[in-house]
Length: 179
Image (tube, rainbow, N blue to C red; front, side, top):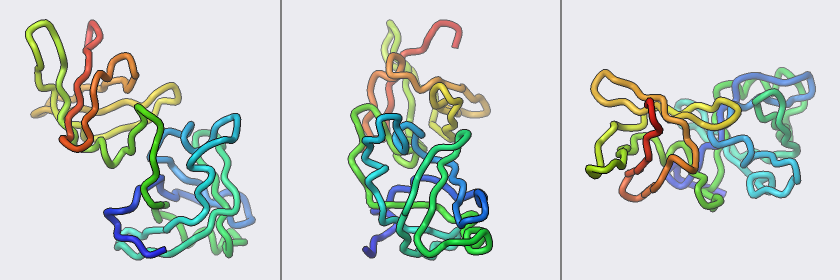
């Protein structure tokens, strides 16, 4: 299962343990709805073999035995991690997998970071800045777009994001009134 880090997609970061049976709490890097859907039919749910990547780049292979959503986090249970002490060793590791195809209009955070954002108006395209951060609100993600010392918090809604070109690292959006 050996992969280069460039071939991997980071799904989230382990921030804590959950319970006493070796489960870990993960902050997702992609929308939670991609991880766990109510109808339980999901691409990410079918992923079982992943990598745990430390801050210094060390990779460990791991197998997911169970996955669920809990209070905004994803709870994972890995094979061979059966105690809180074992799970505690995984704090700060990132969970990664081979790049998988996502639904239309859904993107990996790592592909959107650094993307140049342009607003479309009557006079053409106007550069808003570069995406420097993305965070979830529960209802939708928010792109933090920075230009010079100015930041715009832009809601990542399908009706506002007109075009995303991953290869050219360009996004075209429609600015709602007041933004």
